[in-house]
Length: 358
Image (tube, rainbow, N blue to C red):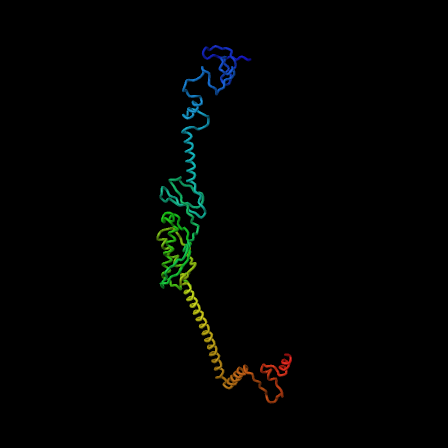
């Protein structure tokens, strides 16, 4: 065994001693463990026990770590750890509320402490973090469509005290993002209420025939103008793109009667058109005959006899062209003429042959 020199802390003298165990054993006294190294987790010998109620080494290490006076190296403890967590959360909040991606068809309405401060264009934009500045992103490029009615019938009173079932649609978009955000609480319901009011006002000044017939385009234009006027008075920032009448019919209870009336109206219009066409043809023919007579009269004044003879020949030609007559001059008389064939009938011999074949 190799001797090692040690220094006695109390006497200051050097003496030889046996090598000590890493667990603190190796003394010449018997510690109850057979002279070997002492188990660090066993109860210390009687002479090495601490005072009753005194904290252990592990409790002392934990106490020092909690008080900030020591502990494991490199690990934040106590208030320092909470400060790091709060700083991280604050950094995430600032980044999340300060960077705003605005789409190509969008606008960002910025408010500073609740008051409007500006509008953000498309792109990546930066503002102060919330709650100092807030951004409300509005889709200004989307064309929205409202259909009327949502279900069932939509009965309206016309100018002639008739009832019409009207179905139509309204297309609208956002013209001014700040006005759209601040001026009206519910834009969609505002558009629907405005459309109903404007359409009923237009139909009230329209007859039933115009509503179910050729007046649809006029109704659409008038309703669009009236709706835009009302929304501009509200300063809503909404633009009406168009109004389309999809259906305009009589109520279902009297639909058959209205169809009969419509059919009769169409038939009357067709008969009127046919009569006008016939009258125009008769007038044109009479005008042509009058012009021809005037030309003949001019020729008659120049040569009366010649004109009379020509008129006679033309008249006889027109009369005899439609008559079944055969004119034979006296010098060339034949004994037999096929008169039935000339009249359009069959010859007697041909008729007999046909009877024999039967």
